[in-house]
Length: 557
Image (cartoon, rainbow, N blue to C red; front, side):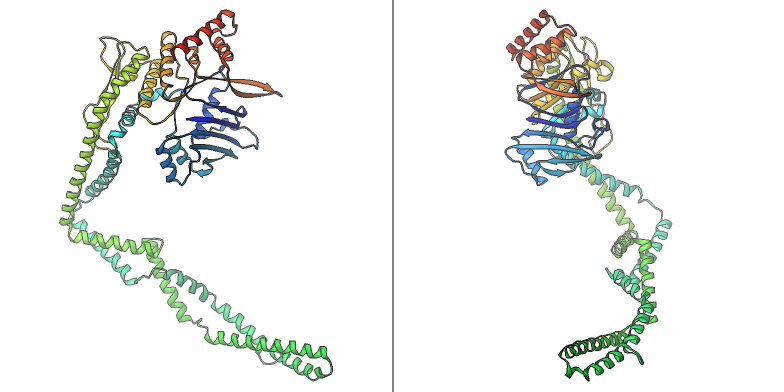
């Protein structure tokens, strides 16, 4: 259940917080008061795209936070998959937007938007203003049926997805396998040349990196030897070298060190310097004598690198990839050398995989058809409750279409709203208001078969009024007995049924417009119903009518 909504610095909302309850939560307000901002805020917290127009033009980050009370092991297990702990049976979804970047968190853990959507889909379902238009798409009909039959379908759809992907890969290989003898000979000859080229190189993984290091060292070998030689000349060469000068200085100071303690200390320091320089000279001589910067070695390194880089340019960006290409080409040579056996095995694999796909499609189709009968009967009953009299609602499957990752069914909902009329596709029969009621009926049936506790309906009352509006209100009331319903509405009949009634309104402070939301007490709810009934002028009669609606709704509860 959605317990709390917290919105900060979004569109016209500076900061707002709403505590929702069980049952039917109704949100009302004048047109333009900001009802769409509330639903938009919830959508943001559920991982939907951030509309630029909802962000304020300042440096303050926007924040939306939803707190759910959850007692569902499925949600708990799904959170564990992402190493997210649930504390005190609460799930907190938040989205912080600053500088055009959105950071999503679940119980304080940063997660990608795709994970946020996955988790939120287990917690809440939103029926948007125009979602009923999706009923005009046959694909939506199949999605609804599969959602209703998900327990019976089990893992079959996932199994079919994997099997169909493998079937397509084998079929594609089969379609490209019918090459003539001459073409096979040409391919074989070319592959043998490439395999031989790689074999002769005798590649070793990591060899290229070592050679690159040596190449750089040898490339600068001449510069290194010139520098080392000049240093050697400076410190140990004939004439005025560092060694000769320090030795002369040490002899001079040794001749007088016995006469002065401080001079004796200087003599010790200079002697240490002479020893250090001697060690340095020895190391420098060893380096020069052991240096291997010869041209022949450099030539072999350069040639070996040329061979390796040539193979990498043809077969991959690394030695590992070149060796993988070698394996693939060797395997292809084996295939071409025994092509008839290869074709026979490929044909058998294709038949076996096609048989598996066919079996899964048939199993899924049988389950779908059985559940479609139950689903359509339940929707028909729900439509009757929503003032569709003498309605016929069914699902037509037609002939199987080609295999796909979703099976071979292409079902479609059909409806007849008048006695004696044949059933027709929804788009050819239903008006906008009727589509809204049909979607509500479907949502009602799906909610009874689903574990999702919280449902949001955003202005499902478009195109309806009178007795139909009353029946929609009663259906919402029934749905609210087993689910948490949050509903934005313009109809007083629906608003009167509220277990909790919230008002969304605008206010102007310091020449700035703000949207606020508050929970209404009983008398305030009656006044809001009177506004919805009476319009600009609210008379005592209108208020009395609103109070009557409220009392009648309470009796029906």
